[in-house]
Length: 180
Image 1 (cartoon, helix red, strand yellow):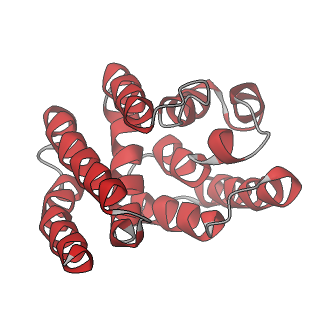
Image 2 (image 1 turned 180 degrees about the vertical axis):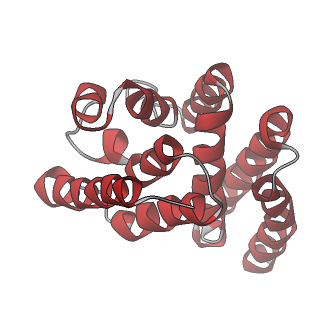
Image 3 (image 1 turned 60 degrees about the vertical axis):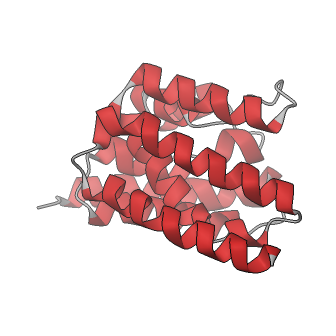
């Protein structure tokens, strides 16, 4: 059972998310809606408050001027560390290397960022067939397969991991139908 303070803290994270994107977000995708879905997915599954808040905030470092230190000041070092682990390193230009680096940092830190990245990946996977080229779609499918394998030791017994596995077949089928 969630308590009032926990819900207040989560609501504060949502407000921070929205105002941060209004101030400096530049991603053309509906990132706020995506971030809310990721956070709510983790919330509805009953994960710990820090994991839920990190789910709401997971794209801020990548897509706004918000820094790890900003997140730590508002939500604590643990949430900031989870968000940082799930964020792309902007200095890495190669798409595949960027994902590999993010997965490495998530796995290195353990279960909390793996859960957030799993919810993020699950939500994003329903859009993989919309990628702009066959090569991009193939990269996304490979990324999904890699993450499923790498996350298994941390969340393999969780329903979230099972849903990632189920999504793989749907993603492959959707991408194949676009490429025909």
